[in-house]
Image (cartoon, rainbow, N blue to C red; front, side, top):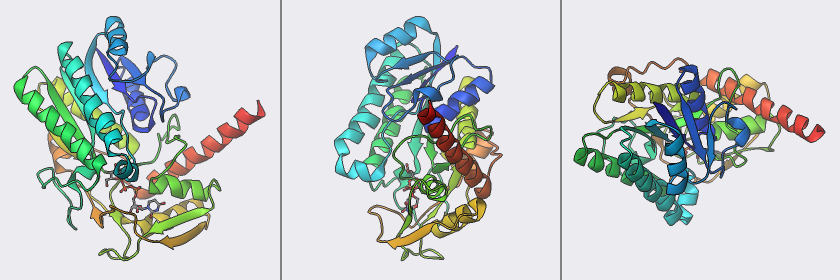
Length: 334
Ligand code: UFG
């Protein structure tokens, strides 16, 4: 049966599509191209343009394909925007996912994998966080993800034919090692992407938001996970559900934390470019430290990440940034 990937033209969804193709799965993509790129979807993949909660498009997909599982990546992801536009986040991330779950269950789609976030934990303190830690999101973005996890939990409890995996992403970065995909969206807010843009001259430099946190060097500590390992974690979750395993909630991070300053220094070292770095005030809502305890994914889902190395993540992010620049030059020369 085919796997439907919502947001399959986006950054993480795009890497998932590659993983599924590498595993010889039948893949179908739906994307509204709000941030995704049409060229990012391999030509052999059936592609539906539109909103993943639109029943007429879902009808078209289900009439042409036998969908056994949904991997749901579409959604809005900018934490600061969610503070200004909370209803957008509840609509996009919660209400529309409700519609999708309802539709999928009506069509007997048995497995649902959801892109959740470490943002559900809020500010968890200075230790690696396990899935059983209290959820206390500090932004509408985090709450919209948590509400959706609850919907999945309650719906699965009422409907044993439906099982799900909610994967809580930590800080996703890097690009496909074969350079078939990477982060291409025009607007960047994530540290490694911004640093890669600074190192390749796409922007003047970078600001460090806050240096007075309770961390070893005063800047925030995060757990950076390679996007290809994240796609692998989804495939492990899919295999788990297909094998009859119970619904799960799993952290996706490596368990090692790097400060903003360490990341910036690493990007300078890997690229060999000493771009400008300035100090700026704290960004609202940033927690001092968020690092995953990923024992559950490793032991219960059989996840065995292969790219757990900050330099590798940065090298791939930089290579992709160069590829985007070459692509732009090629396109403008045509
Ligand atoms: N940062 C800077 N300068 C920048 C960009 C980021 O100093 O130009 C800092 C941030 O203040 C933060 C750290 O780099 O301390 C990481 O910031 P990101 O924006 O890259 O990522 P976040 O940690 O804010 O958020 C990401 C995802 C969320 C997820 C969270 C979990 O966007 O969806 O990781 O840790 F919930």
